[in-house]
Image (cartoon, rainbow, N blue to C red; front, side, top):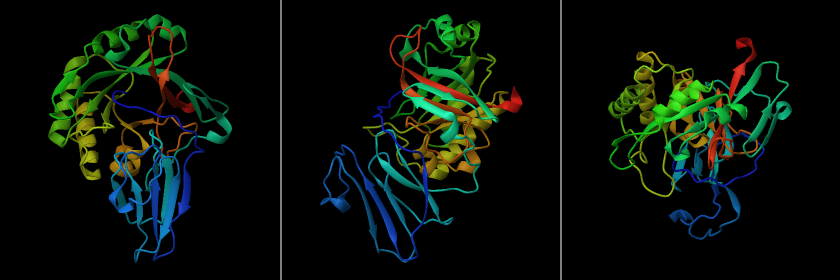
Length: 331
């Protein structure tokens, strides 16, 4: 995707833990190469050390972590269970586990092997994987026959993006040619729109812009809503609530569904942990991004973005690499 800078890390997957007894608080403060220190912790100046502090501060357990932009996030658990993860920039987080959402069904311990953009998922009687990529104008002219011959069987094409300051609509000039040529080469095709919507009306406008570009072109895969923050600079969605992000997702996806297309949502664990209502977004196909050695989400998904540094024949430079998990009952 556009705008992301990723530092690779190796983690062992999500860790579920019980919240502390009543009267305790957990403060997770982990920062690698952190330039901006939270004002409450000026005395903790470290760039390479992970710090976990337990403080007796509250009458009920409070979880505190630093979000993608260094701001502090607090929440009181109602389920008594949390999960830990590292984001794409190496920041550590602790988030509440939503036990009402569908859990991740995949057998990472026995079926998964992953190194950079190369991955296999084998010997699971319930699922098989298909390799794919996602592309935008930044990949330039693509030789789709070479992509297909290299074993990549689907593509998710960027249709457009909204401006990070004004929300102005921008369409991807290579979207239509990528859709047509990928289909002619034998790939399954889907699409996405990079969102900066601050409310439902703007999300609907984005959906209509995406739909106007494809003009009834049949998609094999979903049209994904892609809300993201922009690392390193302010953007117009920085202060949206979890409820608003979720409402925007529903507005976009409902518009897509009304036009006869399958809707989906692009996510990562920062969004799943803090900015989206998981049972709600699981009404749509979930395209989950995680570049760790083992996917960390405790939640179900159908598409997995495993790398943004893939090297694929037919494409000059890096490209995002994805996997589609298909139930064996659909074969």
